[in-house]
Image (cartoon, rainbow, N blue to C red; front, side, top):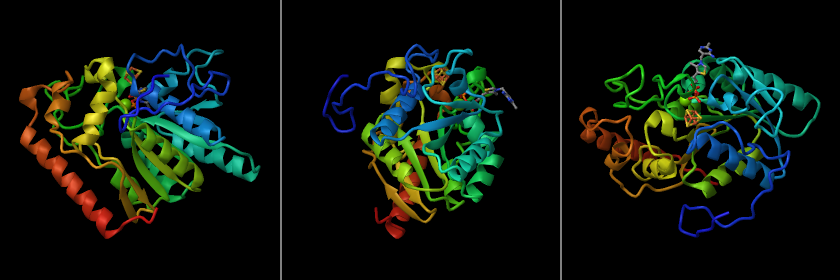
Length: 308
Ligand SMILES: Cc1ncc(C[n+]2csc(CCOP(=O)(O)OP(=O)(O)O)c2C)c(N)n1
Ligand code: SF4
Ligand SMILES: [Mg+2]
């Protein structure tokens, strides 16, 4: 694997042979540059590094199409396909049986933003309120990617989708705050542009019992109308400009910012994606929103610091 020691870039590490234990196998049908593929690979490596494994529970989304056609599968772990709205409920049941039988391994929901912010929100909230012993990872590509790119409540303002051809009017829903308000043990945002932070947060989540919620900013070149080769750079820009801050919330009470944004202008992020048209983006409003988002997070992290 390529090696570079620049901050925030991949560090040299031995290649993991693709055996039966490989979480996402090569040869799957995901588009080139798909953030979900990179996220699954990073998740698999973090689990392997911790000597842990998992059962995946996946609702309707690109992530379940990734599995491929029976009897083959691109997943190297047991994978349960659920209806769109029910993955947290199914995962709760699987985790309960695992715990009753004192079996090892994590139960991980791997769901899109449509299944998380919209149609699965009721069962996600219910699982969070019960503090179910599961890890829930939302790979957020900010659209209903699998069905051709309709808007979801995770789609940011200004983005063109098949159902918002002139740009979405409403802002992206703040799902992290919603999940933190459930006072779950752990909520954290992830970026594939920050692999060390990603790995650290998975290993943190593995050590915690109860409901753990992880939000992954997941580039989708197809829906974002962007170059596949730009995927990592786009989400790096999102972190750098405070469009998608990286932070952790423990017990809904204490906050930690993991990567300080460098004040990059969000304009570059918009400019490199065909889903944003210059005339539909209110750059002043976007810059203000970035600065207010960070001000609020900094205030929370200062007033309620985490001791980790
Ligand atoms: C109840 C129900 N409504 C609609 C669909 C069709 N459907 C399948 S996947 C999908 C989009 C999923 O979007 P998201 O959760 O964001 O995942 P992505 O496709 O972006 O990976 C839709 C609308 C469905 N399977 N079930
Ligand atoms: S449509 Fe988007 S999320 Fe789905 S496989 Fe392609 S790049 Fe990935
Ligand atoms: Mg999606």
